[in-house]
Amino acid sequence: MVITQVLQILPKAVTTTKEIYYTANTVVCAGGLSRQLLKSSGISTKLYFTHAEMIETPPVDIQLRTIVMPANLKRFQLEADSTKNEELWNQSDLEMVPPILDAGAVQFRDGSLRLGQISRAITNPHANVDSKQSEAELRASIGKILPKLNKLPGTWHHCLVSFSSDALPLIGLIPEHESVHVFSGFSNPLVIVPPLAQRFADSVFGIKDEIITKLSPVRFQNLS
Ligand SMILES: Cc1cc2nc3c(=O)[nH]c(=O)nc-3n(C[C@H](O)[C@H](O)[C@H](O)COP(=O)(O)OP(=O)(O)OC[C@H]3O[C@@H](n4cnc5c(N)ncnc54)[C@H](O)[C@@H]3O)c2cc1C
Image (cartoon, rainbow, N blue to C red; front, side):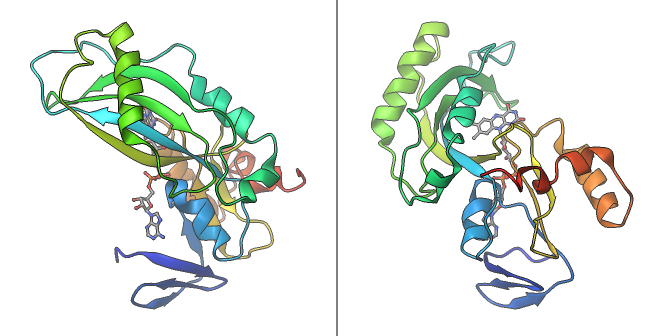
C-alpha cells in the first residue's frame, strides 16, 4: 500500500508526485476531488460536489443525548437544483444555486461537537469562502435550536462532499474508459459504503450484482 498524491489517471497507469504505477484496473475514490482529478485526466463524469462547512468544538461538559439534524435536509434540494444544467459544471468558478444551511449537531465520544452545516455548490473545488461570515451564520442558526451550544469555542472547517444527480453513488467502469472505475458520490455513506465496497470488489471479479449494475455510471450516459 502506498499513500501518495495522484496527479493523473492514464488508461493503464497512474502518475503520482513520485512514480508512475502501471495498473490493470484503476478505481478513483477521491471523494469531492474525483470530478477534478478525472477531468484533468481528460475523463468527464456526472459527479459533482458541495463545499461543506461546520464548526468543531473542543471536548465540552455539555452532553448531547442524540444527533440533531433537520427532518428534511435542504442539502438534497441543493444537490438536485444544482445539477439541472450539467454543462454549467464545466465553468471554472460558478456558484450554481444559493447556499443552504441545515442546522444540526453531533457529539463525539471525547465530548467534542460538530456544529453544522452549510453546503455550497461552487464549481471551483478551491473556491475561497468567507469563513468569518459562515461561522457567524452557523452560530446564529444553531442558537435557534440549541441555544447552549452556539457560544462554545470552536474552529470553522471546510471540505468537499461528492454527490450525483440522483442522490445515489456512482460505482463501476466509466463508459468509454476501459479499466478506469469510479467509487464515489457518497453524500450519505456511513451505512452503505462497507457492503457496497464488498459487492463492487466481487463484481470486478465477475460476480454479477444487481445493485452494482444499478449504480453504474452508465445510467447517466445518454443524459445531457
Ligand atoms: C460536515 C459533514 C457531515 C457529514 N455527515 C454525514 C452523516 O451524518 N452521515 C453520512 O453518512 N455521511 C456524512 N457526511 C458525508 C461523508 O463524510 C462523506 O460523504 C464521505 O467522507 C465520502 O467518502 P469518500 O471516501 O467517498 O470521500 P472522502 O472521505 O472525501 O475521501 C476522499 C479521499 O481521497 C483523497 N484524495 C483526493 N484527491 C486525491 C489525489 N489526487 N490523490 C490521492 N488522494 C486523493 C482525499 O485526501 C481523501 O482522503 C458528512 C460530511 C460532512 C462534510
